[in-house]
Length: 219
Image 1: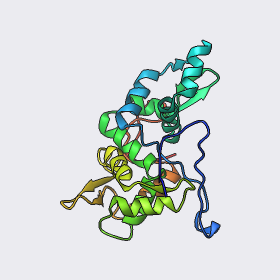
Image 2: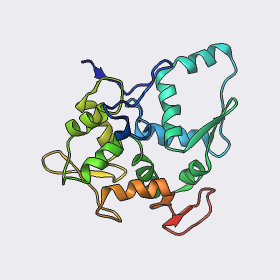
Image 3: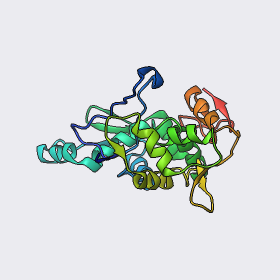
Image 4: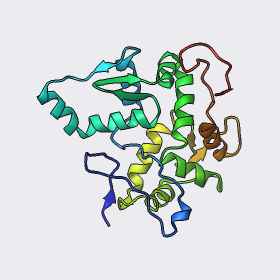
């Protein structure tokens, strides 16, 4: 079977599948593999607090709509809850504005919480809750069971985990090159997923609108 691609196109749909539909109760977003952490940081800096108006030129609009990388960047920003689109403007969400004003370690804390409910990081955390270390092949197999996109390439999964999960502190690499859950506030990797769903800000010291707030705050 052909290896699945993370890249998004206008006609591509990521639909979860399973032998028993009850085993996967909801659709989980899948981060595009062609977008890096630096891309998202730069995207938020570009938008700023005032947002960015999309060109109304028919040629430029056609280019944006047909650009796979640009669509992937838009999708990544929305998945992370940092950006949205209103009419012909791309803007930061309240969380995105707080993210923009936060210091770098706080930015990584926000991303760590958001990534925990996005694939392939969610599957990696689920596996890490049952074993001391995991590898990209295990994660690829688990993600492949959820999506009707063919088998996911473990090499691509590994690159995505290294690109996002290592700098944000979600995982670290051991001497064997396997991924180990990085203990922050809990020894249970699933705790960060529950915190993300409950609206817990793990590290940020700025509120969603940019004002100050305690280190841990439930919204």
